Image (cartoon, rainbow, N blue to C red; front, side, top):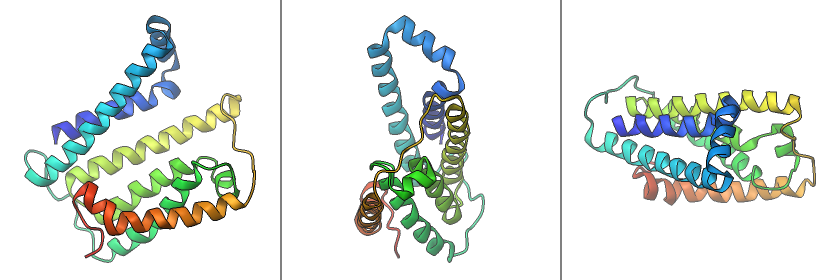
Length: 197
């Protein structure tokens, strides 16, 4: 599980650097130049994601040190997870569209989707590597949301402005299509586990 933990640490550090330690980020940009910093940040981000994916798959397949059952979720939790993921899918899509009611009300629907995704998977997975992954991502999303609230108050970050309700319809339709694709194909293809029995 070591690779998973290293990947999560890299991910959290690189994705909380700007809101938590802006001075350090600014110093790095001043030293390297913005293009070089962006390239470095992108490479480290991709590396962290690769380590997370590989570390998670390796921990699930081979076990090893630190792999054990933290808790055993009841079977019905899988149904709750599947239901929550419908909401997460719609929120995720809404975050990439111009603002409808969903994006305006949620302010940061992609973060909402990530928090729902992490919480939903904690309800259905009690293995130590799953708990480490989903608790870390959930905590990261919560911390990021708190820092964004502060940046909104300072005027550094702007809230989305409502454009049209048609984007809510698009978010719901595309979100449902994405959900169906994940449940019936993508989850098993990418993760190696079918969400449905």
